[in-house]
Length: 144
Image 1 (cartoon, rainbow, N blue to C red):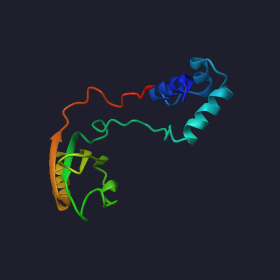
Image 2 (cartoon, rainbow, N blue to C red):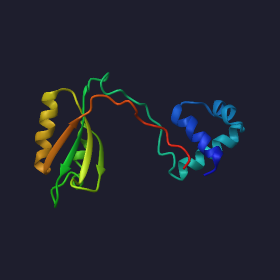
Image 3 (cartoon, one colour):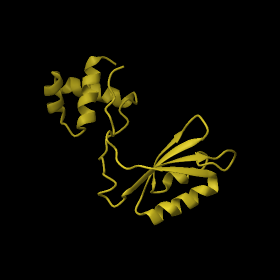
Image 4 (cartoon, rainbow, N blue to C red):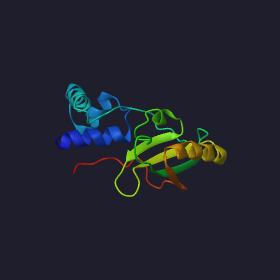
């Protein structure tokens, strides 16, 4: 990737809805050249998709937390694909250290959060940390 690719990524991370015409104006390339670079970034897997960012709190999911899971063996959240379909689960990370995974979750209430903890307990020992606020979210990726 060259500097122009990184300029494209910076613009698209800031606003993925920019038109090719506007992108070309901002990075000083023709629209066909921009379209070709974007296509190559998509095909190579650098750009994995375009999506709407939704504020969970405003969408009715005001409780947010990280849950560390200590589960080992055949019954683990990492080995059960159904867990990833639960609406509360936003992210699952396999990690090193004393736990095997960290989940970022949301819930519609503390009662729903407690129910989620109970469901996760069937996989191992959950330990939670409530998210009070997120001063930095989705920080754009820049050139190394």
